[in-house]
Amino acid sequence: MKLKDDKKVIQIFQSALKLVAKKGLSGVTMGDISREAGIATGTLYVYFKSKDELINALFAACRENSVKVSFKGYNPQAPFKPGFRNIWLNILRYKLQNFEETVFLEQCYHSPFITVDTREKAQQLSAPFYELMERGKKEQLIKNADTGLLLTFMIGTMNELVKQTHYGSITLNRTKINVTFDLCWDALKS
Amino acid sequence: MKLKDDKKVIQIFQSALKLVAKKGLSGVTMGDISREAGIATGTLYVYFKSKDELINALFAACRENSVKVSFKGYNPQAPFKPGFRNIWLNILRYKLQNFEETVFLEQCYHSPFITVDTREKAQQLSAPFYELMERGKKEQLIKNADTGLLLTFMIGTMNELVKQTHYGSITLNRTKINVTFDLCWDALKS
DNA sequence: AATATAAGCGAATAAATATTCACTTAAAAA
DNA sequence: TTTTTAAGTGAATATTTATTCGCTTATATT
Image 1: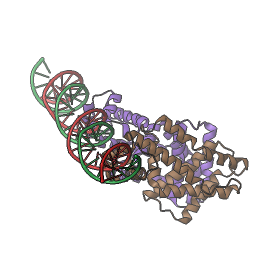
Image 2: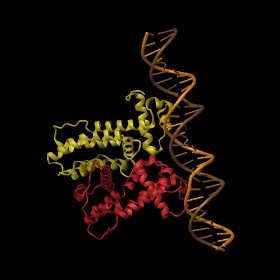
Image 3: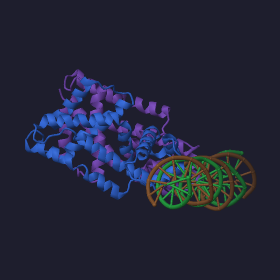
Image 4: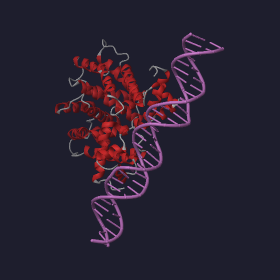
């Protein structure tokens, strides 16, 4: 098996994501993925021992990437609200531009493909988000409620928003994005 | 094929839901479902032409049921906020108590199993929710933002909340439920 | 250049899964 | 009770899909 940052691995990942978004995790076969990636089915097995391993690796890569992108430009010394807003926009932008990843991660949530180990590692990546909320609470800008609850509120909204946007029942523009941030902020602010 | 409100159909649906929540839509086979339901695999085909049809029928049934339950006790003549709160609690209670359904519906969202036709029929069932929000806006209790946006906000929060609750990162009690409703109301109120 | 090693291929095989069907059992009608 | 019809069965079949493997092609090493 080759290294994970190989060009071809990225290509395989991209193809898998595209297909999952289109056909659901249920409907994607190794044959589909190889065809989409323009390689032979056997080649997939040069890079991954099994379909299982492919999916788990993709899941881990997506999670990692998504957290990294979220905190881009975040400075803990700068004032809270603009920093929070920046992260919020980062997440939304990321989810919108990488819709396939969003769908994939959501589908993985209840999938038997994802192992306990992969799941736990993913959970640990949420730590920065918890810290962010804790900071907001300490500065008395955010309601003094359960941190998990507050995060859930913030993330759930975005997931649904992105989903509805992609399925056409909502068309987002700059104004609507601002409105949505305000909704979110009004909910969380103390 | 037999009638849809048959006892056995309910039993099949229940088994399918249970398994989807546990193994994801991807991991459930007709063999699994029949075993869980305590019937022979062949018998499934007495009730449904194919797996495809079974999934679509289950999806339709879940959506219908969920809308019906949401509006239980709603009186358009009564004041808005308590009525809204009642619906909000109905939905949350329903999603918590029927977690399998919640998971199933979410998994179906991007699944190739669900046909365009089934999808459209499901969408039409959302009408009462739109009307509810419109009423709130008319009475100037709810922000004058895009109705779809407001609904998305409300529903997304709940889905994520229910998910996190079931996976143990949040433990809900009466107080937390009240807090969460307040978060939601603070977001939506004008 | 000659040799060795790795990457890539895709038809062939193995495993999993949906679906059928000849048959049995139960229920309804005569 | 006898006959007819429907429901239920689960092993057998068909289909789909993951995985392997002998082979070819490219890349690296000597």
